[in-house]
Image 1 (cartoon, one colour):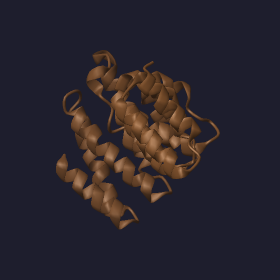
Image 2 (tube, rainbow, N blue to C red):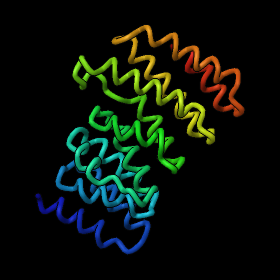
Image 3 (cartoon, rainbow, N blue to C red):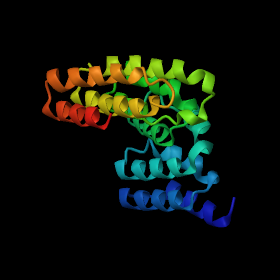
Image 4 (cartoon, rainbow, N blue to C red):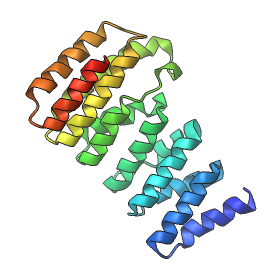
Length: 209
């Protein structure tokens, strides 16, 4: 660990105001050093949205190296920290995060967690998965997004539409037969959802496909 990295970690740990914490986390995130990863993950639970966004950006920039530490530190009690962790995993898109995204989208009590997970299901980098597993896993993602697209919270349904759109885009390379099923569901959402924003997003997604 370099002296600069150590100094920035200490700045995060010693910050005594929201503004100082935000600035310190931003500075640590910007250097993109694996040595700062644990501190960035801890910042996800500091009840400071600005610092959490900066930490997520830093973790996403670190990419695959951040996946296992994030998975090992998913907070089962602090749903805010859990939502930020899910956002980071979604931004990275590594298939190792797929199972936690599926579970979170389908079962988490927090709408912010379900929303982040549903969106993340559209961001999986399928090229990083064993080809023999892709079709099965994409079908599972589709089934979960079908359920999530009926979530009581409209923001979660909106995220599910995003997930369906990008699942469809990616499925074209692996199982194009899935695309008509996705379009059919988007058509139903565009006609039947109770929220205008969700209906409009479904129309846009359908056009993209």
